[in-house]
Image 1: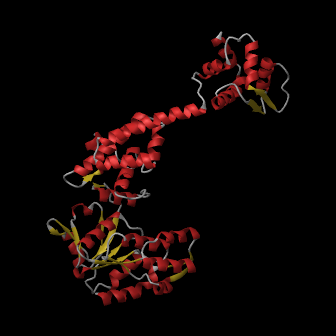
Image 2: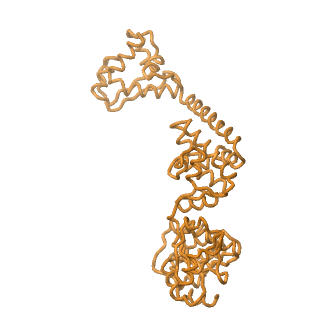
Length: 427
């Protein structure tokens, strides 16, 4: 009789909406309570309820109480089945209240996270620390994990286990540097396992970000820098830096290719791939002038050919290749003079660079007088101006306040002659 009852309601499509709404009400109250409202009912729905309840149902909506439906169910030939049993058979599930379902879901997730933490405890300190922070603070990859957890618990468990093993491998790697593909092959036999566009690759980036005390990496350059800091050699030649008069040294001494560029007084590009065998960067005079703008850099290479000057061009945002060379130059005791556009983005780059080294890097041509000389008619948007609130260097903060007041961008090209004169004076 129970199967016949369920078959009756399932075969009549006019009851489809009503049963879905009754399931929602039952999960809310845990019993036959509340009213069901079917707005703009179809002809099929009107006929279905006319046959069940009687009456015409000619209004703009069909409305009935759950208790009345259960009562009517007991008055027809299916009196031996309760509404609860009917709903369970109809949806092939055990009825639970929303509260209970939430409790079950929470308990299951809690057990899963505990399982992950136990796995982390068997890893090294950095892995355990990352997993503890991920679980307790719900950051550092937590949303990524939970999003994948809804799809497959076991798959996400494997992601975590392999990421923890990767962290352990990086900490114990004797060569100190390993390619990303080699890391994937060593841990999982799949060289593409930690590719940055995969879930496992993004999880590794989150783990490394936490360990290195960084916020979320939002672009390719930030990820490359993170790999570099973590001892991972990315298979990437897209990150480049333009140099002039800077010697690049391998274990065998000055690189002959770059030395030839220096002798010919020519600029040259260095990629991440080129930097794999470079151990040191240095220059005559221990002074390096860094330009954000390519046009300015090219002009300086032309007008300063008569000097043994050393220069670098970052081409806007600081790329990883540039940061590696900058770190090498600082380690060699060089003083780096950095100049860029006088706008929120330019000051942001300068601020980031100054935080990398105490004393070796100097903000250059970032004064209010320079701003007055370089000022343009280009209005800075409010969104861009808000970036100035994140500056940490006191000199840049003062300049940032002036930019907020005037709201116009200053460009490096307007200072080229002044910079050329100052380079001559400093050299």
